[in-house]
Length: 158
Image: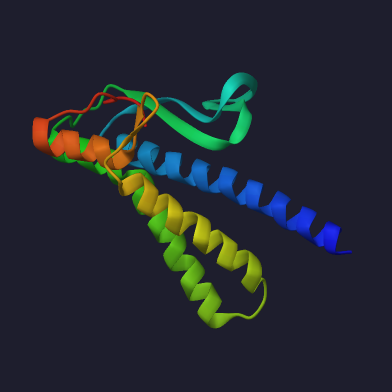
């Protein structure tokens, strides 16, 4: 019975990481759309492509890493680029606020809501760090580069 419970919990964690990553990338896409951009693709994961649905692509290792490609911003200035860079973090933060509200007002699903809150809190904190991992910059590093230099190395990718 314990094995089944741990297996279901692990599966839930993988699903939550995937959905939280999708929500994060939708945040970048949302702000790109607000500033007149065209969303080319939203990718989840890395490795070979295993499925695609419209603008969405799912890669082999789907529960980690995401990317939002856009172009043709109608409002393309430092402020609009900063909002696009921070959009994913704002969406994850909003999800944290919803989790806190639900945890205070319901006793149902508290374990799963705590997992959702923990994962999204970690995503907020991690993505605000101005660091490079491998060849990818975090949103925090892109935001820093945009504020300091006017643009980042991944201007149309998030």
